[in-house]
Amino acid sequence: MPSHTDVLMFLRSPVLPVPHAFTTRVGGVSQGPYSAQHGAGLNLDDREDDPQAVAENRRRVAAALGFDPARIARLHQVHGTDVVAARPGVQEGDALVSTQAGLLLAIGTADCYPVLLADVEAGVVGAAHAGWRGTLGRIAARVVEALVERGASPNRICAAVGPGICGERYPVGADVAQQFQEAGLGEFVLERATGPHLDLAGANRAVLLAAGLPAENIWLSGRCSTEPDFYSYRRDAGRTGRMWAVIGLPGGGAA
Image (cartoon, rainbow, N blue to C red; front, side, top):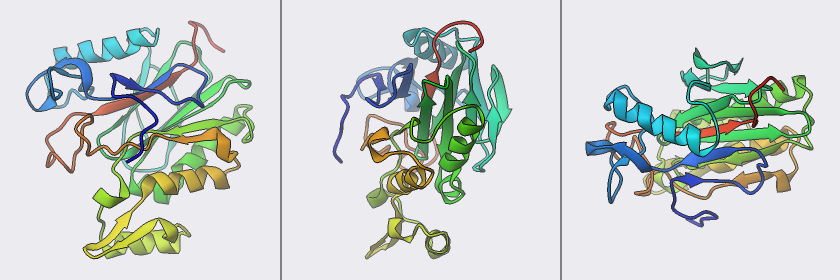
C-alpha cells in the first residue's frame, strides 16, 4: 500500500497541528508475541502482556508527546458509536472528545481504524475507534457533531485516519456486506473471488466528507495493520498487542 510516513515508533499526519501519534509496534519493552521484528515491542494493552512493561510503554508514548502518563483518557471499547467527554482514566464507549489542555486521548486498535480529529481554533480534539460496526454507524460523523457542539466548525476540523486492516486483507460475510450496501456505503464493499471485502479506510473518509469536512482536511495513512510494523488481531489469530492513536491539546490547564 502507498505510505506517507516512515516506519518509526510513531506515524504522524501532516493535517493535524496538535500533538498526536499513531503508534507502531516499535519502541517499547514488551517481549514474546508483543515484541517487534528486531527487538522489544510497544504493546499498549495490559490484558495479557506484563503490566509493568505496558505501563512503561504508555509512559514512553505520553512523554514523547509532552503529556503526563497520569493524564491519559482511555476507553473500554465496545464496538458501538457512543461518544463520551474525556477524563483521565477508563470510560466505556468508542470515541472521546475534549477541550482540556494536557489531557491525552487514546484509542486502542489492532485492525480496526483509529480516527483523530481537531479544530485548533475552537480548542477541541476527538478520537474514535472505527471497526466495521462503528464505521457502519458513522462514528466519525458523531465525533464531528460532538466537536461542533463544543464550538468547532466542520470546515475547520482536520481528521487523520490511521493504520487499519486494508480492504484486500479484510473479507467479511455477506450479511455485513449487505448492511453496508443498505447504509449507502456499498461502494466500499469490494467484490473478490473469495467473497466480499470491506474498505473501511475509504468508508470513513466518505463519512467525514459527508459530515462537512473539506477533502484537503482529511488524511489517510495508507498503511495496513497486517504489515509487520503493526499489531494485527486477524494476522496473529487473536494473540497480539494493541497500538494507540493519541491526540491532545498541549498545556496543563483547562482550555
